[in-house]
Amino acid sequence: MSGQAYDSNNIFGKILRGEIPCHRVYEDADTLAFMDVMPQSPGHLLVIPKTPSRNVLDADPAVLSKLMPIVQKLAKAAKDAFEADGITITQFNEPAAGQTVFHLHFHIVPRYEGAALKPHSGQMEDNGVLAANAEKIIGELGA
Ligand code: AMP
Image (cartoon, rainbow, N blue to C red):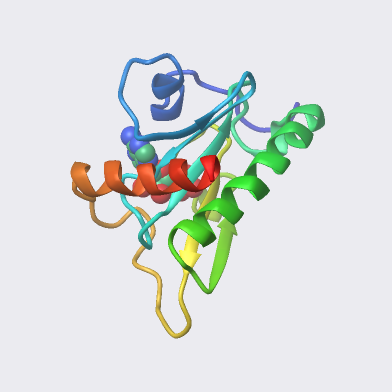
């Protein structure tokens, strides 16, 4: 394999092991989704596979094929829960592309006509707001 090896001592690895908390919105045997703590828009969430990989470049295609239907499901739920006009899905591979956490993740970001995004990895959101936003998505998934 070319490129760097996966290092389990990353923040999402710690979340998966329960070593640090997250505002969880979805979990199954293969996948975890939780609120981004520095949202670029209200409702910004992250979807990660439980199987370790740094990013798409070293991911097992079988992992991606289980992950993408969940990305789609959560994108629809976030769009409805936040009454968004659209959804941006982003995914960065290696520092040159803007990646800062080296466990594969997809960003799901609600968008509104004419509204610019807040900066990537910008300001930490209040815990209460993140918890309420997680509940909105959970409610939509259950609807
Ligand atoms: P990336 O540049 O794609 O690697 O983005 C990593 C994302 O993880 C950024 O949007 C951060 O705001 C987010 N982030 C960092 N630490 C945490 C955390 N403990 N819980 C949730 N999101 C986080």
